[in-house]
Length: 69
Ligand SMILES: [Zn+2]
Image (cartoon, rainbow, N blue to C red):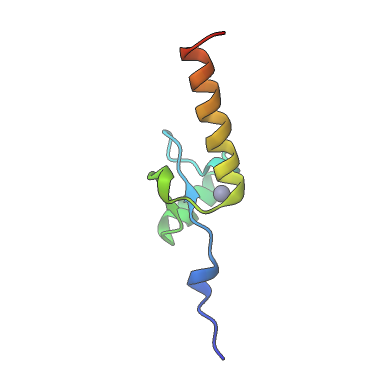
């Protein structure tokens, strides 16, 4: 049985600077991810757990800024 490797790949999130969220210091990783089509600016489509966690934190921080308790 041949497994399709593409289906196993996580889709990473790109931030406003075009960097991969879970690897934001690695420009090469961003280029690679973009070239291979495994990164997206559409955060709703992201499947990478690390990216999702960072998106969650990002959104939470935004919300707290908007609505201070
Ligand atoms: Zn990621």
